[in-house]
Image (cartoon, rainbow, N blue to C red):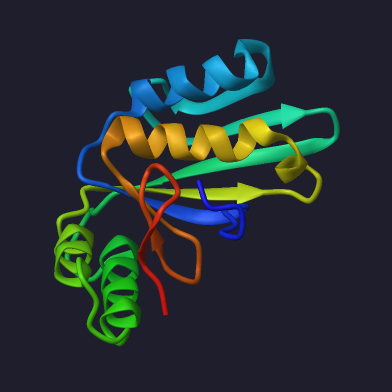
Length: 150
């Protein structure tokens, strides 16, 4: 995993929706007592993790209709990354963005990212879902490797 790519606030782009699996991964890293699920474990709106005075929130986003927030986020990410000069794998990343079925917004309050489990958990979710993570700069693999960066 690259140390200089931050995922404190990022978005996971997943080709599948596996809400229960994500809850299980989060519980594995932080324990059941530290998490709160808004919705059912198989179809949640958000999962919050509270450790001490810090909080990590995972927000679920799915496509509901053409032109919705999900669709606009897909298109804006695709447009942003499509402007990066041609590199090996660029077309694959852009196609994967358009094939996204589920996004998970990751919001980390100050102090939470100091826990190594935070990044490990984000990348474990990506690996399990065969997903990518956009950190505001570029797209990373589930292993934290650069897929497409400016």
